[in-house]
Image (cartoon, rainbow, N blue to C red):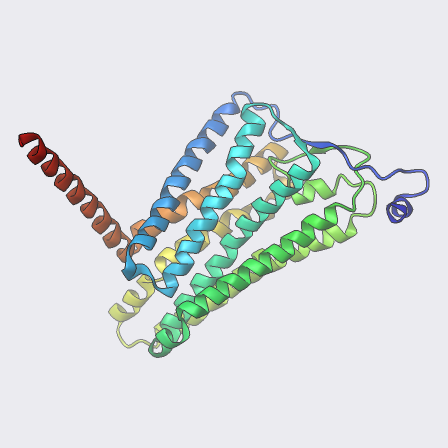
Amino acid sequence: MNFFNSALGRNITFVRPAYFIISGISGIPNIKYYYVFLFFVYIVSVVGNTVVMAVIYLDHNLRTPKYIAVFNLAFVDLMGSSALVPKLLDIFMFNHQYIPYNDCLSFMFFCFTFISMQSLTLVALSVDRLIAIVDPLHYHMKVTHKFMLRLITFFWIYVISLVLTAVGLLTRLSFCKSVVINSYYCDHGPMYRLGCNDFTPSHIIGNICQILILWLPLMFILVSYGSIGYALLKISTISESLKAFKTCTAHLSLVAMYFLPILIAFTMMSKMHPNARIINLSLTSVFPPMLNPIIYVLHTQEIKESLKKVLKMRRQNKITVKVTVQVCDGK
């Protein structure tokens, strides 16, 4: 406590509030319809990602390193949406805008962890595509189940360590001015700026997390696709190049859906009205988890074929059960 008092000054007492208030979007009529829309987005996200995970789990032909990463992406999309949207709806549709201090930090940790893992899972998928096209002869030797599992495990440890550090540094802040967070959830930046004492460490770790979780993965993906493009130019026929590039279309779509809204939000942030910024960031958080499974089902032949196979087996099982029941009734 002496450390905090010295950081705040002699006449200021360290304050840890009982709760925070999530201000969200204010002054927009009929804003509840927006939250109803988010509810339907969440339902589609849950159903879509559950279907992708179930198809990969049930079809042994999809137990490949690439689909380990796809399964992980569907998992983090499902958990990220479930960490954010139900609480968001509880806060704004049912006017539960008061959130206890510890709950707010937990809310932030889970939201940031799963959203960050989306970015790094896209990196894992880009590694898979890079090796598959640049070095196809050694692909099965390099990209093994063990390799992909180790890579994804490393990313989980990497993200959790960064997010825990960012959340942990908030506990050294005193909130003696305000407890109103100007965002749609317990957002790191708006929260640490409420601190009365020096929030420089939180500001620094926030910038470090942005670089290591957003910009560095994006740079890696762009460089990997530069290498893929260069490798495709060496392929003798255009048809072979297009066939190889087609295997990347689903991943490229996911990258665009995740990073483009974030880039727009950061470049236009200073020019946006606070309400527009909050709406844009909330859509950035909920739309990729909804669209990712749709994109993978539409763009990936293996998943489409597997989904058809699962549905066909289910229909056959229903017919078998129906016939059995009829035979039993006849007896």
